[in-house]
Length: 352
Image (cartoon, helix red, strand yellow):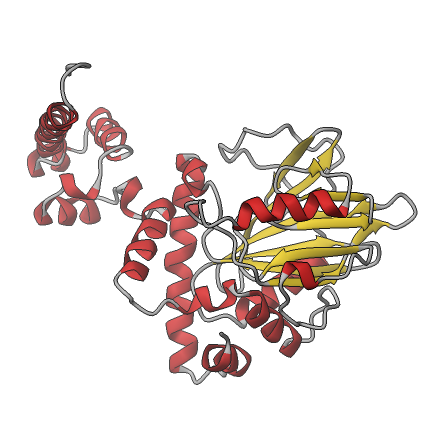
């Protein structure tokens, strides 16, 4: 493919390369899924077919190929993909298709829902304020009504010790925090933070040491937790460890952050609590972000589309895809059986 030329020329060259690769894969699949070759049941041939199906995509398959895959106990790895589902959900939202999970992306709606479930959350009066109307009380958390990836979320330990949570930047004073937030709200930015803020209790894991709560992010699929991300700031950076529910450390492909050596993992009681929250939300997936406080697990926020979802390796992309499909089936079964999602329905009807 040429590396020079106009953008249009490079795009056309990429398209041609893709078409050529697609045709080669289709031809190889036709050979691998040939009925006679599959009937011969050669172990070597089956291994070759399985290797090809591990990276082939749905667009490479015809309906007859799909039938042969099913009849021979084979599987198209990318047939269930969390990444693809996240992109599908994004396109559906762009078309205006109702996606109820996103109602809980609003912090006021999330708190209304979590209160109905009787789950502990940070104390807050729930009032939305302009930033310049907030008193510099401490210790508190100041966050925009809508925040992505902790952008614009500030921890105020005291009037002269304020931290921006997203990058853990020490701002040093309330005045510097106001200036920093002002830049985030600037209309000159592509996606400015709106001047609508909530103030809430700061949850600490160690009050004596002023150590903030450890983050536990639960990847939950309608009542079933599949993965837990434990993270904490250590020295100058964020350290992370992923856990499976049985207490095994998971290798997920997310390796941008150092490993959290002091990670404890979730307890069975914590997993049970989050599973209960997830089961009250009739959507296939929701990441439920919790804070490990000094004495209990405290609700943080709901995340319908987790950041860096594209970085999960093939194994976890598939496992999440399978979990999504299973969750959809359970939701349909429960709805047909008359399951009552009253707390969620109330938020859907009134959450703004």
